[in-house]
Structure formats: structure tokens, C-alpha cells
Image 1: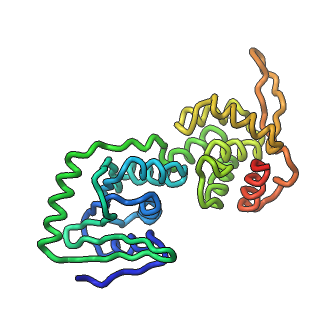
Image 2 (image 1 turned 30 degrees about the vertical axis):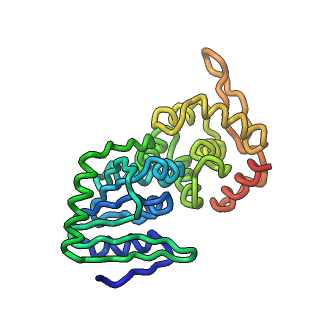
Image 3 (image 1 turned 90 degrees about the vertical axis):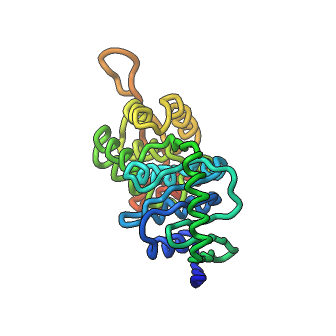
Length: 268
């Protein structure tokens, strides 16, 4: 039996396991927090990961746009594959040479590892069969790298830089927290005086949300006083709407404070 690994977070446990693992691994039946830790700890040089997880856990973890976008990055780069698996009881990391059970406590997490050859071989065979039988899971979220690149192309470097900075200042970007991916997009567009038409068209094209969702969210944010609009005449058709910040408290340079104030205003 290998030594138990104890870390402050699940991501730390997974990172420690990956550091001593050669070849690919299968991560089996993780809960949402473990999936989030897995996505955040994967990086260049990490082993390739095949993730077998319950659909409910996958949906809960990837309801956070940052987690979903980073996971999509890893899928795009070939470092992560995801399939549906509903038969798990323990969160496991299975490699060719060891099996680690991931256990979360209140204040820390542990990796309980065995390298018993018979047990490891049995686990590898079992989950190889499970992987072959499992259905692929579609994230339905664009990779963050694609989101950032297309935003810079469509709306310019300043808007893209603000989008990146605000995301970096947030721990979570999920529906129900006041700041989701659509809200953040509209905020940075308003900070840069972009047109609603341009940001919503970009958002629909890249796969963030429909134009209708952008329009509804804009209305809610306008009613909250977070943003305001001004009409911009065009040669043919209805005037376009230019987005502006609607509260002077949002006139700050620090992105963490900008995000905090915006979330507070939306909650009022």
C-alpha cells in the first residue's frame, strides 16, 4: 500500500496523483467538486484523462462557465475525454500502476492509494470495459480559448482583455450567482461602449447563448441600473443600441471590485 496523500483540496490530491503517474488515467464517479478540481488541475504535462461520471455530477460541475470552458479546452487539446457512467460508488483515479480512492473531508481531502498488482489489474480491466460501453458526454460549451480569441476578433482587444480580467477575478461564473457568462459579456461590452447587436451576435455565434437570451439579460440589467443604452441610428432599419455602464460605482479600474459591485447591484 502506498502512502496516503492529504491535501487542503481535492485538486491538490489529484495533482499529487498525476505528478507520479505515467501514462493515461481513468477518473471514475467523481462528485461535482472533484470534477471541478480535476478540470482546474489539468495542465500541459498532465496525463491524459478519461472521465467516467454521472450526468448529474457533470451538469452540476459544468453549470459554472469557467469550469465548462476549461473542460472544453482540455477536450479540444486531447487531454480529456468524458463519458457517462451511472454505476459508480467511490471516486477513483485508476492508472496502470495504482488505484487511488479520493475522499473529501470538511477541511481537507485525501488520496488513499494501492499498488497491489492483482487489484490494479482488475480495476483497469473493469473500467476499460466500462469506458468502452459508456456514451460520450457533450459539454455544449465552447472552449475558453475560442471564446477569448473570437471576442477579440469581433469586438476588439479592449473588450476581450476586460472579459478575461473579470473572469480571472471570479471564483465562479454560474447561473444564480448574479454573474453568469451572459451577464459578464454584457458588462464588459457596456464598459467599452459596444453595441448590443455586436455582443449578442458574437455570443450566439460562439455558442454562449442565443440573441434572445442576451436581450432578456440586457433588459434585466437595465432595470437594475447596472447598464443603460443609447440609440445609434443606422442607414436602414431600426436604430442599434449602444451599451453603457449605468452606475458610477462601476467606474473602477480593479476588476475584482468591478465584479463585486456589479454582483451587488444585480442582487438589489
